[in-house]
Length: 177
Ligand code: PNS
Image (cartoon, rainbow, N blue to C red; front, top):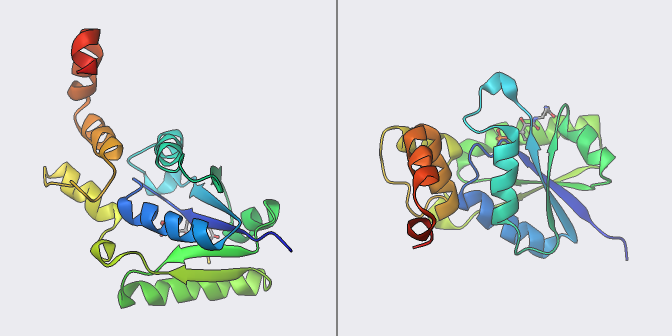
């Protein structure tokens, strides 16, 4: 039987538990799932491409059929390059629908044999977005439960580099404990 590869494109700045929920669902229905991070310097991302890649690699290491990659240019071209026949996207609320429909139909016009598959994340993530996570973190709001603990730590370090500096200076025994 033909193996179905899907890509899950996005900015992932930063990756959230909503993304992880969708990756988990996608990994169950596709033979292979490639989480594809768009290189989007014009958006002025908080995390560099390699930082986002490292976080996603760590988050997905338990999924045997999930890989993480980065891409430039059109999603349809990247999909063709990796022989993907589907694009996975999450729909949280009706407000997502218009933008997602527009994108899916434009992608279909560009490459008619590439299917977009929409999945819904778990209800508790239906209001969650990377933009809100960034905003909460910048304004000292709690982001517990919205992102993996490792992403929460990276956000803290990114927004207050003194924390990273402090960690680096701590003696080994204290760091482990
Ligand atoms: O996480 P995001 O920012 O909602 O992801 C948007 C993304 C990366 C899927 C979209 O911007 C995209 O596909 N960009 C690549 C350029 C492209 O193909 N544009 C035409 C889309 S119709």
